[in-house]
Image: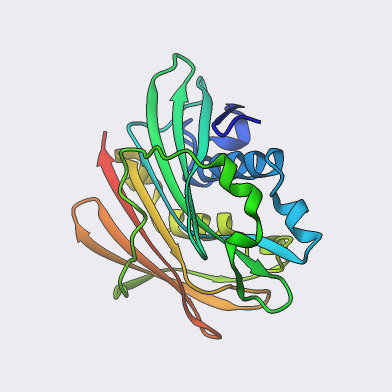
Length: 244
């Protein structure tokens, strides 16, 4: 199996927002589907890990876009592992439109945890991963640590049944949705997402009550902190917008 692999997506009605552009949640989902398919094809996907009571968890992600795809686009995403450390592995992505033009990049860091203890597992316990490393980067900064955020409460939520995934915690896409919902339709009519960064800090589980703090640090540049009453800060993020 090739260490680099390309996957294809057709933009469908459920992927676009009211502007006929792919939503941040849908784009993130396509990136994560790409990661999952590639890991499975190479022998260390989610189902394979779960036979050992392990699972993948996303730690950090950054997506940098020249433009967001529209309903008329098709999308290809190429992915590969750039680095494997003791506890984290780095996976890269390159996004192209139907014409083959690069329209974005993404970079992610992942860990494996024991589903019983919820503690991290050393990645050298899966030696087969090493053969799929390609020491090739993408022109996107590493997902960096986002400091504590202070700002207005822009959204509130309660984690319910439909938010919970196979790892028994809130799916990462729900975090993206809570962040995206911090802006009005009028705002989105004038702005598009250029860069999205997210740091996952703690698991949010069923019944947790939370809020999203939003802090504007520059025109079109916002920081976020998702926190719950039960666990405190669970996630921090940044969205950088451009103007149409």
